[in-house]
Image (cartoon, rainbow over all chains, first blue to last red; front, side):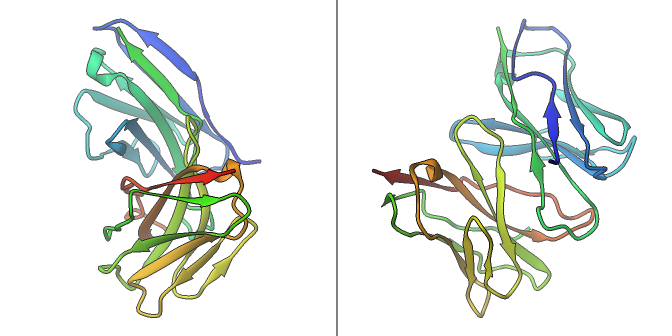
Length: 114
Length: 112
């Protein structure tokens, strides 16, 4: 079964900490995405990557950076965590070729910044 | 990506068909209609997609109007586990412009 795995289900960090959220996919997909989801705001795209070492800003990149050193791994970095970054973070991947399933999502990481 | 319009919520009785509407009047010729759902506290899950023809799989059926400006997702025999937020999204099927943009979706409540 294809999988997108996010390293942590729940995470609590302090304001000002540097936070790494890891995502790994085993489907050899070219594209990977980070979303955050907040009540009333739905899913919003933070960053995405179409290839190794390649990244593009999504709709809300401020306060975040990403790293994609290997095809299967896409990391979201909060350089200095703030309380307004408390959210559910969802990683997804998709292939470049025409594909039946579109995106495959991970189970999410619920981050609380205190 | 073209925008979609969905009512905010609907409910149906367990065992009955749930028909979830979606309007996408500005859809382009190369854009597909995708449906995802998100059960509480989980990541979104793919349900079905289509371009012009109606589609059916083990989860649902997708009916697309001839002018492609609207579609309906049909869950033929809704169960309590189908209670979720359902997202209708239009996008190109593959490649660099294929990122998903989620709207607010429709909350389906299946009642016993």
